[in-house]
Length: 148
Image (cartoon, rainbow, N blue to C red; front, side, top):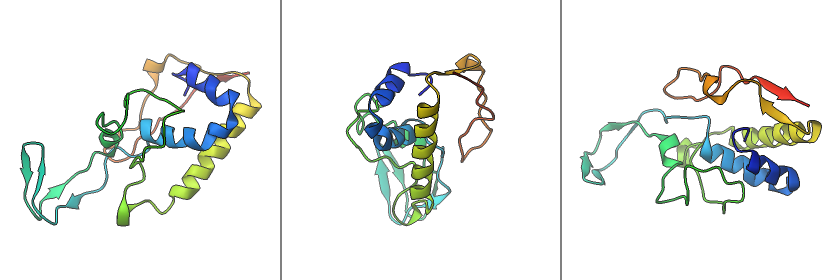
């Protein structure tokens, strides 16, 4: 959101967009890079690649959430995007049990920050932000902000 000030302006102008904004944040820059190992229950074709039954696979959730066949302008943050389903919390029996709580926490946090501060900016250039080193989880080591 800090790298997309036009989207922050949209959210500030209409706080009713907050639930949809949280979903878009989760799609655009979710907390999980890869799902844990899964295995195929049957032979699967992905494009021209065959994956046999009983083969271990690693699912790139972050990649799926940027699928251009599923999301119009997938690499663009758009808080007014129609509510296309993302898989940031997994899917089916592997869906995260804490998903509802995480969504509520995000709504409270973003709503509170936007209500409390009229201006929120990165305190360092975006290229200096460092992400934790993890194959599975995605997150910043720190988020230095300037608020007013």
